[in-house]
Image (cartoon, rainbow, N blue to C red):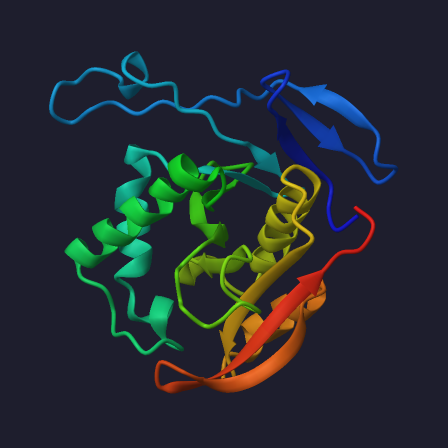
Length: 225
């Protein structure tokens, strides 16, 4: 067990808490989220039922992104530090919006995706974490395995939140979706994220240049789920 967490149970539409002994107990936490159309003002759930998991760790709450999260997401992604180890420069508002739509779209098309991450005590938005399918065309040993990704807002870094959030997301994708192999790409210069990956049990299987920067390719393989 990586961390205590709450997972969504599709059959019961309820969240359950895994404790250290892997027992469960119900938690008063709705698993349905709602968005309001900016055009009509009508809730989108009048047109389509949108459901998603709620995952909780000791300090954090993870859930799929909602429309109201965009301003916080935009501020995070437009900060130059968010992409310090990427081939990209800081995002503009339009690029942040496109990425936001991509993250939300994962849940509709694939049934998993990046979560918005919140401080459970303050309800403050502190980052994103989760899994994606980013169509990188890197070959069968990488493509179509759920790819872990994480970003923590600048003001909340160095608190261990990335490790805690990734652990919760990994436990969810393995226990609920049954994923037996997940992957991630980390810049070889990003020592902090390499440490996060290693703490969660990802192991390097390849080192190569990726989009202009030296990268480490990691995998996490689970046997006997």
